[in-house]
Length: 291
Image 1 (cartoon, helix red, strand yellow):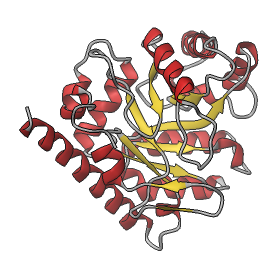
Image 2 (tube, one colour):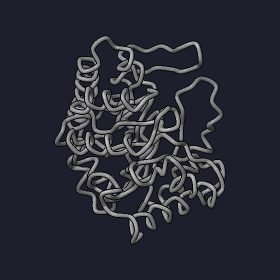
Image 3 (cartoon, one colour):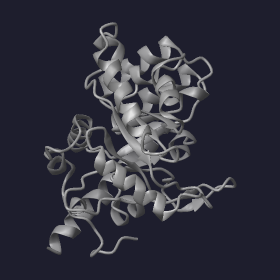
Image 4 (tube, one colour):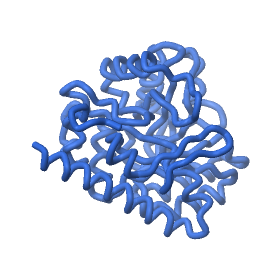
């Protein structure tokens, strides 16, 4: 838990106020503004196996989320129909798509993984993530691949999904699974290299806000969220929206099974949205009272 003294000034600002920072990537500005206007800091993890299931889930929860997190490589029939459907729903329901690819290879290989093959992730996912284990060169490699894809003469804007056409990266800085090997030194390196690449790195996958320096304004997305704390038989550790947003000062909660396994996914998404937003409002209100 972050003490009041440890909390960064960003934890007392609204998403709208933070979106006005001129040093943010265009996509980070857009996302913070979207969260502010739509009043949701919920991301749903779409761990399903068919295009039909994926698009139905997007329809069910789209009104309550700011981001839909996908695992394209577990969709048995992933293809152009999947991409067109996701683009259409995300445009209509107003949320971003985050492909949870967890890139972690040498630069030339991950550029191919990002831009080519049956997934061609750069064409449809606004946000991707990467681990820093191969070294910091993964950041400029992905940034260059994104830039070339967007500027390519043979890539129409329609292929890149709904506006905005920008791309951005989250660094995988911490994980929620028990016994993971993400050391504090590794997390610190993620923060260091994010500061060196603010034109492409929008933030982190982490368990708490990593904003430390005065001009830090990174977006933190936190997985492993349910309405009650606990864990599963495979090492996943769950925290509540209040813990993640209110105490750890994260920005976006990522919820998977808490919504996917619900009898009424719309109602479950509505409840997570409500709890995440209340935790954020209370955090900001409490921080401002202590000024």
